[in-house]
Amino acid sequence: MVANATLHNMDEVARLGLMIGDTVIIRRAGDVIPQVVQVVAERRPENARAVQVPQTCPVCGSHVERTQLIKRSKGKETVTEGAVYRCVGRLACGAQLKQAIIHYVSRRAMDIEGLGDKTIEQLVDEKLIGSPADLYKLKYEQIIDLEGFAEISSNKLLKAIADSRQPTLARFIYALGIPDVGEETAKVLARSLASLDRVKQALPEVLTYLPDVGLEVAYEIHSFFEDEHNRNVIDALLGECGLQLQDQGELGAEFAASTTLEGLIDKLHIPSVGPGAAQTG
Image (cartoon, rainbow, N blue to C red; front, side, top):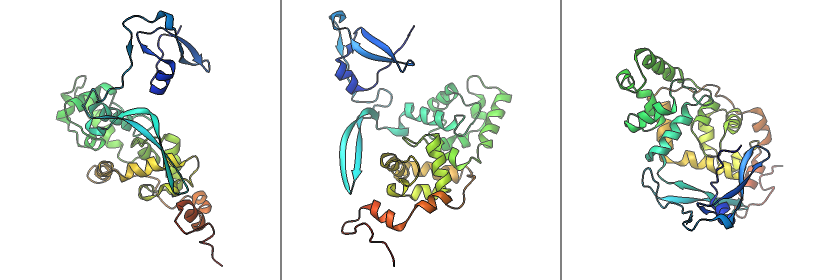
């Protein structure tokens, strides 16, 4: 028996003509995920209401905007509307901040044991943390006052936070929560570029040389590191918080072998510079 089925795509809501209060037909897509496939129009109640996208975030009050998909080809950009609506408040939004911290401390990211969802919610709600960097500034006196903490658990959490100060480059990149960068893409970036500085400075056209990194993901990575707030948080983590990234070194041999000046110039689509312009005799 299926207890719940979710539908988040507003284009699909419009296509189905779905309204609040409707009865729907669902199926298991791929025999796994419950999927809404049809509205039972004859069972629609008289008080059914249209599904409205909120204009402002219900948590922080910031504007809600629809994402844009930007396709770039041969120096030209084509912009289309995406399916996702997002609050523009970033980490100033309490809900986004909580999710960012939850992701940062998760097992496959920085793996900080003892920081569960409820604890993170308390820390944010009490304004004890405003970014991942603030985790490393927490004091014993602040933690022991949290619900569910005593002397032993407070000391264990402080130790777990301290023990996370030497992550691998791949874990750190994944922990940052860069849009569209999952665990495997983070490993590719770390293995191929082998230093955070190279990842931060890489142009999107360079990033597309990497396995499974398309132009859209490349622009997400580049934009993330161009953002001043993100740069400040990273600088704080690597500076005053004392994080030391492991596994940094020389460029990955596979990436170095596949990258040529001629290919890069071709990818950059520089006006009046055609393919083969970088060839030497």
